[in-house]
Length: 93
Image 1 (cartoon, helix red, strand yellow):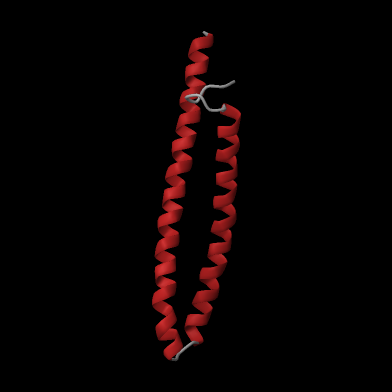
Image 2 (cartoon, helix red, strand yellow):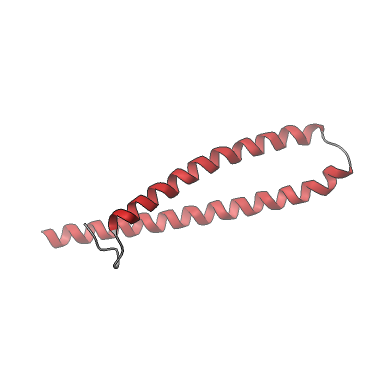
């Protein structure tokens, strides 16, 4: 089956699957990073912490924004695939 506006249906499904797998992998790794940060925050108390903490907080904010965008893109691809499948079924009736 082909036909997502001139792009390969199979390639689009493959991309969606890879993006979802990427989200799972990086999400698990990010949880580990946050856990380690929480452990470090409890015992790190010097000027270096005061300098590093704002950078880490910015990293967290950036990660959260990227995660949200990735979720939006995967939903967009999923919707496009579903629309293409529905159109193909309608044409086959």
